[in-house]
Amino acid sequence: MSDQNPFATAHQAWDQRWTDETIRQDWLTPEPLVVDSLAFLKERGVQTALDIGCGIGRHALFLAQHGVRVTGIDLSQSGLETARSAATDAGQTIDYQFGDFTNLPIPDGSIDLALAWNVIYHGDTDVVKTALTEVRRVLKPGGLFLGTMISKRHNRYGDGTEIRPNTFIVDDDDEKAHAHFYCDDRELMSLLESFQLFRLQDREQREPGTWHWEFLAELTPVS
Image 1 (spheres, rainbow, N blue to C red):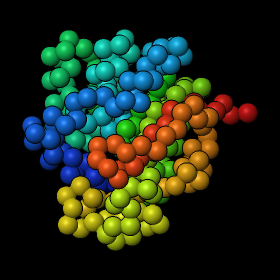
Image 2: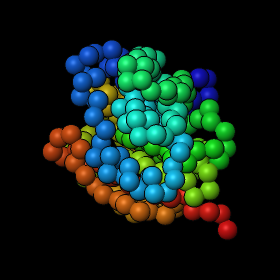
Image 3: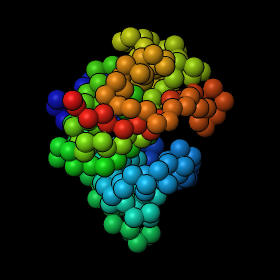
Image 4: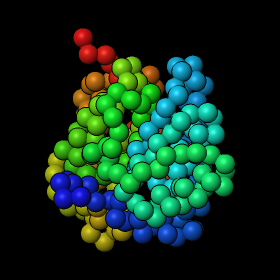
């Protein structure tokens, strides 16, 4: 995509990583907050969801298995191929599309839930802000946003070269050779100013020191 931000390149590393079955095995289980939010999503009448940066489809498949009509978007063809195969094997119909999280191929105001797990921080501040603008655009009024950002408590914060404020590239690291943006609670609140938070936690994800902000929020109606 010729208009893609030059720092939004992490999909290149993941496209290669998704070809490795050993790596794929580590990304099959839905994250706790996604699972724990299911009852609330049903209470709110969520019928349609967009899994942004869906990877191999663990969250899209989980939601589809609970009656949600899901579209998955990713720039990794290998990830999408695996996701489509998994959906077929599970007897689920999921609309997987090749697409960029900064330019979602989704109509305005058409989605009840946007899910972006460990995705939109792959870039600089401009990438994050553009991604959030796209999330707001595709959500229905009062739509929900379930997502993550990397916390400045993360043990890799400050590693490598700071190419933009709070945005780092680590040249000798396969995945972190692509830009990653980190934020603290104040900066996160500013980024999510268009949303009302229902849940927010700073959690170590896969290993000690891997702190990520995890949140569930509602798009605030424009007055």
